[in-house]
Length: 520
Image (tube, rainbow, N blue to C red; front, side, top):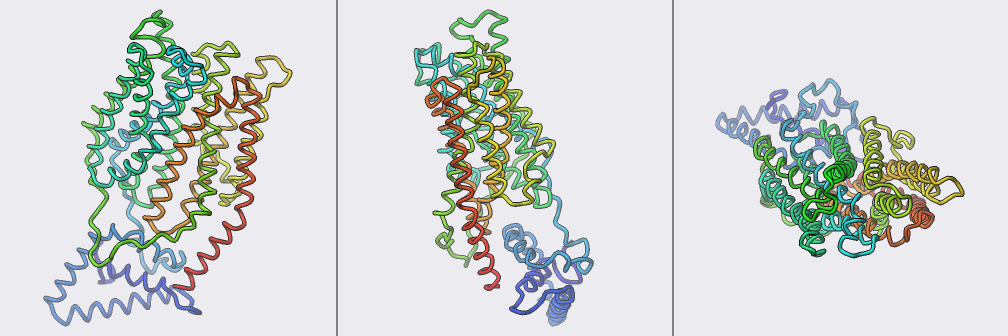
């Protein structure tokens, strides 16, 4: 695979890149590609014939370039993308197809399990957040803080996480994170016996600081090629959705155990503290799995290449991108708000048990995760128009908010409508997240700038989830009518922002692409 047409792959890719840089008025055709390759082949052959020793040196240089090709893969791919698909065809042959790089199955499952557990550690506290707050003598609304500290800490830790993932070995980082999660789970379980709410708050903050989607997405980006990455990203989305549903179900298991063993009021082991012990055991199992099955993965950050100089100042339109970050923040306001308000209303107003609330919460999240597996999304309806998808998603969530109002119906009907509205909200916001993240990834074609944009995306999203779960109980004041009005206003604002930014966003992309074409 090192030589095609007598020319090293590195030299052949250079020829393609040169063809990709078409001049004004010049059409790129397959004959242009073949002519460039033939010319480059002749030049290369003449150099080989001039001196045998020089030829050997060039061969070694070609192999060295092939080994270093990963560093410049994005630049080469951009050059090749400028050549129409039909131009390559049979002229190049199968050797031009990208390698199907895939991660080790056992290692991927272990890392996926870690991400599922970190999400479950967030949502396992939702069913008992009200009773845990009351155990310290606080109002039920403060229970949202117990849940919200985890994503809020994750948002603050994102820059540090990205830095560590770049300079330290991946397996070592995951092992350390498992130990930190075990410490946080232990503090969560011992907070009530110690009588210290501060211990509980610190425990949740610790768990959030080593959570988030960065670990799994980083692992997938390092262990897959462009041709296989999308397939594994589906597992990423599905795993995170499963984690949101698994947490409440684990809380349900803890509640059932507490009731069956009649230990609801025991100091060290009760329905409030059992979730901490459950997460302690699960993260201990995960640490063992990491130590045994996860293959080492080297750091991604490399010394700056000689002669390339520092990266110049960013030219991104941050004032425009900020409007999309505004939408990124409000997406989890819907999701987190519904989850915590469901438990608040069901236990304080509707008279549900904690186990029933946890079961419904987990079931709805898992059904939404199933829609991801079945590829049921709004993307097929908008045909690649991410902005239109955003508008439809927020409008659908606004409709769901109407179902949260208290109508003159039987209580059971009101609860049923609240659950149906929750499913629609979670489904719509899952789509809105995909559309918004896709839009933000298009603001720059430079890998480093795109990475910065997506890191900030994760920060705003996790921060929004934390703030949403803290604010929602106080805004709703234990009233489904107020909660419906609250979400209706938020979603109508998002629809208005998406419509208002649609035209100038399209103009910006068009102007950028035209400028890039003229420079080429």
